Length: 116
Length: 107
Image 1: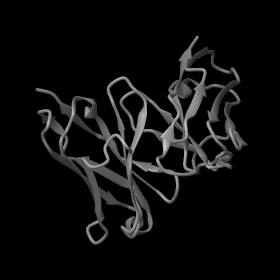
Image 2 (image 1 turned 45 degrees about the vertical axis):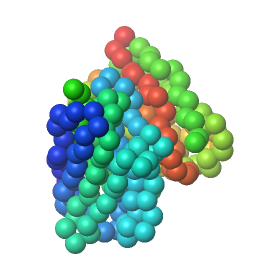
Image 3 (image 1 turned 120 degrees about the vertical axis):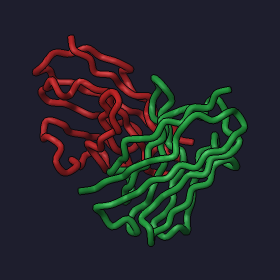
Image 4 (image 1 turned 90 degrees about the horizontal axis):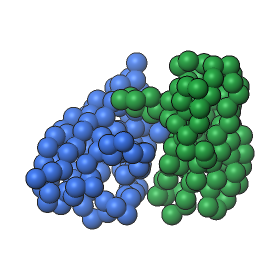
């Protein structure tokens, strides 16, 4: 059974940092692109970042470029998102998602709240 | 960035109705588009990929069509479990972009 389990969310002050993690199991993690997608409360889905299967290609949304860093460890079947200089508008549920092209497998998400 | 425009933003329908949702891309994206279903408090679920291919395990009442800039998701006979919000997503290039969503509600 495919499983993606996010962790690391919580309450952080504006300007602060947070590191999200995603533990993957039940599929060939090292063969899949991995993605972070977020959803602000009551809003639609927003793509955040993607990393290729071998870590050679990385993409970011303009809204997070320079502040967020995606990484993966294929030996540990894990994905991370290091978030710095957090803003109020980064408040959202963050989903980890895997796919060869489109994200096909999704975790249940972890809530990040940026507030003073 | 490619803009994806969905319509309508919401609709009311009855069980058994045929429902069609459209998604327009601001430039041609071949058939590089997927459709997702999301229920409240849950993660999105992939329904359709490559514009018209049904994801494994998804009921055949869901279908997708289109290419270039115009795409549709059709539910042939709406079931109670289909009341949800639907999103399109282009995977033609980066940054990936979603449509704004279509909420399907019970009439």
